[in-house]
Length: 409
Image 1 (spheres, helix red, strand yellow):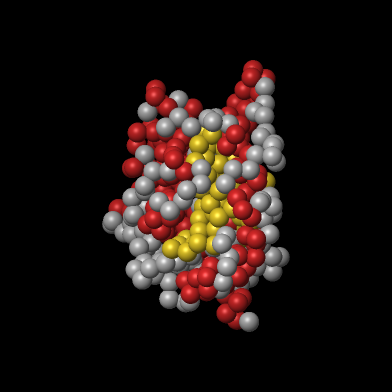
Image 2 (tube, rainbow, N blue to C red):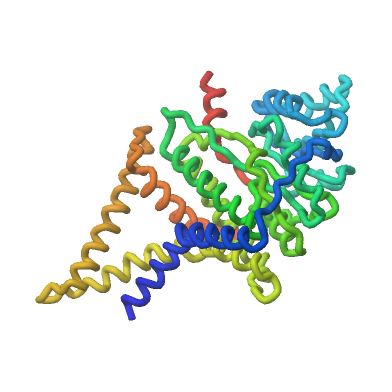
């Protein structure tokens, strides 16, 4: 029974991180053979009016660069409205943007206010002021590629598409931390899975750094929601619309300044994952939602809510199989002993990577064990945070490398 339990947990972990990627690749190949490939929308003549919404609480350090980036986007100026929500800001953000608007910049609109209600409340408020058929959400501290807007909106020619997820890319320099490098590797694999998800049926979750929705499909989100991008996109998918993926529309951002800052962000995301699962329980009905349920469980539920707890259970079950030590060492016992030693070495490498990261010492060989273990520990801590009810929509953002560089310079 203990061996069966260990193998079951090991199978879940293997499926979550490797098996699903392999399976969905095969499913996409089968679908392509039977129905042909999904045609990529490619129509530069399609230029609906859009509103780019950016929640910008105390983002004065990023606003000039964000505005310059927005003005350089390859999209007609008269069809692109920039809406900043700066409520609660105390760093002069609102005054800076108001001055530009009053100076004649009609592309800019600002929603200010003295009270900070959180990003979700800012998004809910912003959408009530949007009159364009498409609204695009982005973060104030990210830079978009020049064709980002054009590449996102082209998918909306298809009436079955309710939202489009852009891609998040991490800009990591060679001299920077293992946390940033691990984060970059994670998002590369995540991007691959999103491409396959979209080719099979639908993306299961957008990145908040850049995603677009049909304005009339936006549902007001609960103010305490931690993963607004995920909730918004999955609710649209649950209504029968596809969430498309556009890798050639990307938001570039710097990694977290330190492993402590990254931990803060990951724990919040993990808590949001458990919150989202509870609010989207209806999507577990495979009879009603079919492929969406399969993708949602495989890509999200297992990774957030199951696999992190399987890892310590595997270690404990493996230890139980080795105790007490038998007088005669059998091949089976030797196998489980080797596996246990391998686990211990893997986690020792992860801990070493963690300690070195605090000293700003970067060892590439430790990236995988360190970041894999780090993500799953943060998931368990996120569950504890959710269990304690700490799910305020107002949160302290993690410092990014570029923000610290600006302060130092």
